[in-house]
Length: 514
Image (cartoon, rainbow, N blue to C red; front, side, top):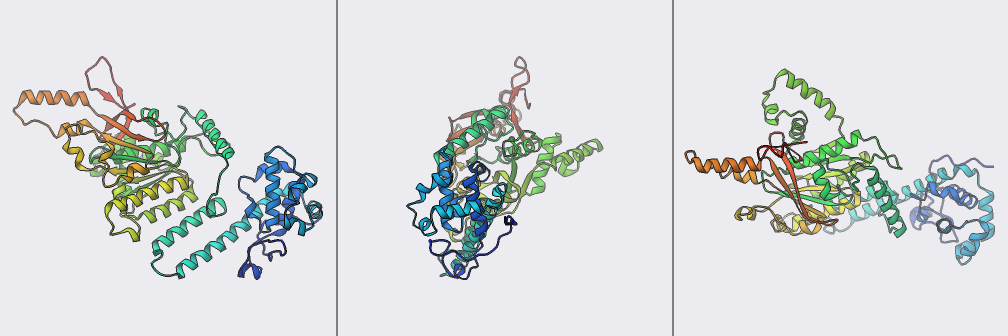
């Protein structure tokens, strides 16, 4: 009995006479990566033991085989096994008799040789990995030739930025799935994914299907943040958009750090690693905000150094805890949408990022070919790319957005979808659109002059009634109803929490976080 393959990719010439293997210069010179011995051992072993299919059908597909006949036999084995039938020499032969390449190789006699030459039945998963690795290497060669061909092609067809973005995307897909593009998915697979999502939600506290925001009053409306969704958080300046983003980012990353429960694949079921693109504030400024929220020491006092020894000790202790949080910040100003997508793919592959934040949408620049076009087209390109990226990476992307000044001209300044600035594509591409609104912000601008005691008394009563209430208005929700969540916003510590009356019998307007 021969020794099993060692797991390393070797090079064999493509077999002839059965339509096998790729054609072209590389194949003709025998330089394409393949391991036909591993392919024969895998197919022959599966004919002896179908049960081992469960260990690798999630990553190995028929097109990964260099000898295409082996791929077709593998497809028939998988189909029979999925249908509850046993695939062996006798049962699979009638299904293959119409295959010209199969008959040329000897038909049933060839299958018999495959079975007889199996080195070790318990090494099938290793053989599958070798076949997959060789297919990935061939995909890399094919991809590099395509990249080279486009780079040598006529200038103007694709800009350099576009070619780099396309290459990054293809490499990401190859690294994740073994070939560019995920291909089709059967309805059965989709149903199984749905059931797995439901099972994960059942295990989570609160029964959420998506990632918890850490704010239960908001989770009740959203059902958590769903994978592949583009979520827009919009508001006028001063409404707390960045505070909402940092609150969500820290809550999600902290939940992931503290989570003990895992799914069947060993992944934590609560929270996620977060990538935060901050185009307006530096990473140090964001860190200060988060530390302020955690310690209860205002960020302005931290920046000015107006803290005592006890507070400094509290900051140092909090920093030790916060630094463990899986939150990654990219504070590159004016980053292009192509560069943003490329960096997101790269870090997701390395760190298994689960949520992406973009602060904020209007500061992202378009790709090279789109610059100079009107702003509506630029924003359209950015939102379409973000939505495609959310689907590609299978993560929720939360992007902040400014609103137009039309809000200020209305008596009721609660925002609506028509206020989204510069492009209707924001509404079109987003799965969820949330607006932040604080009536107290506008009330502060209406403070009466000193000396008008009646007006001042009315103004103070209104301010006490409003307290720190903040409305999150859900203007679009692809997965559920629109509505409104009332939250508590603390401008001193720039954080959002649940809204709870301190004492329902006490003075109106006494609210606090919980």
